Amino acid sequence: MSNDWNIGKKNSSGLLTENERAIVIGLITGMEDEKIINDYLNELEFLASTAGAITIQRFTQKADRPDKRYYIGSGKVEEIRQYIEDNDIDLVIFDDDLSPSQSQNLEKVLKRKILDRSNLILDIFASHARTAQAKTQVELAQMQYLLPRLRGLWTHLERQKGGIGMRGPGEKEIETDRRIVRDKISKLKDKLAKIELQNETQRKNRGEFIRVALVGYTNVGKSTIMNRLSKSEVLAENKLFATLDTTVRKVVFGRMPFLMSDTVGFIRKLPHHLVESFKSTLDEARESDILLHVIDISHPKYEEHIATVIDTLRTLGVDQKPVLMIFNKLDLYRNQSFDELLSPEEKKNIEEEFKESLQKQYQTPMVFVSAHTNEHIDDLRNTLQHMIEQEYDKRYPYKTKYW
Image (cartoon, rainbow, N blue to C red; front, side, top):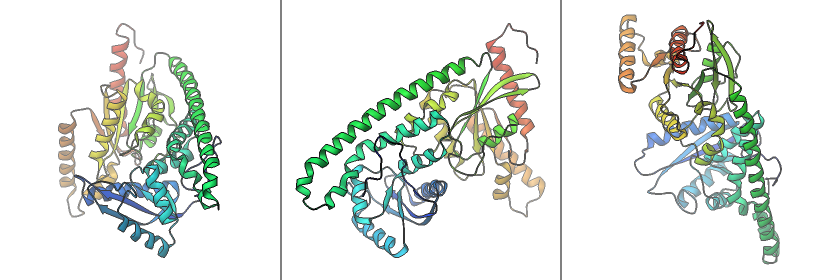
């Protein structure tokens, strides 16, 4: 492996060109079964597609625990090596994080670029970052990911003759790079702290407005809903992490003003160090008065997505705020769930029973909409307006309202 990382300079990880041919690999351990792993790999393929790769094949293996040397068994490694050679594969993506030694060992045997879940997400983050804050957060996460993997970046020295004589200089280069990376991490943390101080000042300057934050799993339609409510044009794409930078808009319902922010989407198995790096991006959620939890009701795993978001909000310490659950993509849900032979009345009854069961399950205010077709957006607007009025009443109980 050549030293593709320019230490101390702006770097990129993962995919270098579009349409790289990839395979994805998952390990079935513990209480997991093949169906769960296939769901994870579906999401991993979507991540790969977002980054610009085409997934050609997927591999799974059952094991009590990950193999220390290759993460998967040596027999499976050989099977994958043969498939790579026969099918002109450029890229191998693992659904979990690999240790530095596992990544290096796999690269030596497979002779292809090896990515794990963190590396792939970092690549997407790097391509979607626009603001100084997001770019700094991505670079910090990349450096933290890189630090324990530096030894593997100098394996090109082993291919030179007189390897024993090269050990000293090689080790010195590694130690030098470690110091550079550590210094870079320290500087990036300082830079991020300054940016966050500026953002905090901006938030304080927003005055007395009630603040509303859109949260949810990635690719559930948060940006589309923000566009519908704020009548603004925020990027909305069918990609994971299409929105990375927080967007804040002033919205007025009638004469009642408030601030609405869109945030980075959550995802299952999001590596801890990435959550840490992007906590400041989620400060809009932390400092909001109301959370709009957007759910893709058409997704077969929407309940797991809800659980992921709730767990992340709990980690951020914002799970006690007023929440409005917005079940989006109602049009897709109907297309997927209803038999064409059912009468309109039967479809309506099934839908109402489904909504009632969700209300009993989650015991929180909720609305059902299709942001794409604009269905029930007025209901969402009215419900949200009522919640905002309640928050204004609590904050300023003796202040005359003019809306």
